[in-house]
Length: 116
Image (tube, rainbow, N blue to C red; front, side):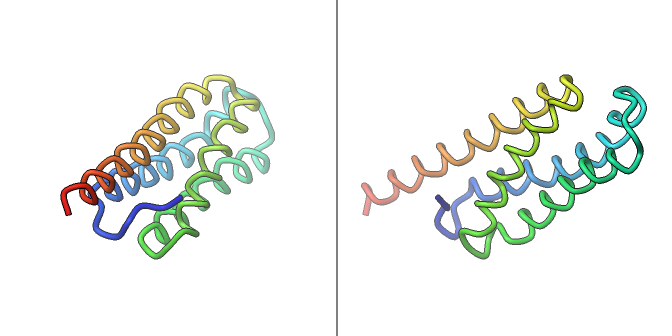
């Protein structure tokens, strides 16, 4: 579930989560203004996912917990698309980058094991 310490793809995954913090923060305004949902709901959903992404980024290099939170962030992004379907585009992009980072990170680790 997690990449080995020192894997360069950890930086990619960390960047994905950092940008998701920004995008989820901005999604508060999308949910409130465009979807015409109550402000408290927009702050709860967008802000909650932004905080979850921030926590995942903070714990990513410390163990499996950060990776678990990262996967939950990706699922939360898909779920947020039910509030505003345009968010599914963002969920597809960031989710794709997250999966790509995990897959390429595993390949790098396998290649390193084969050369040892």
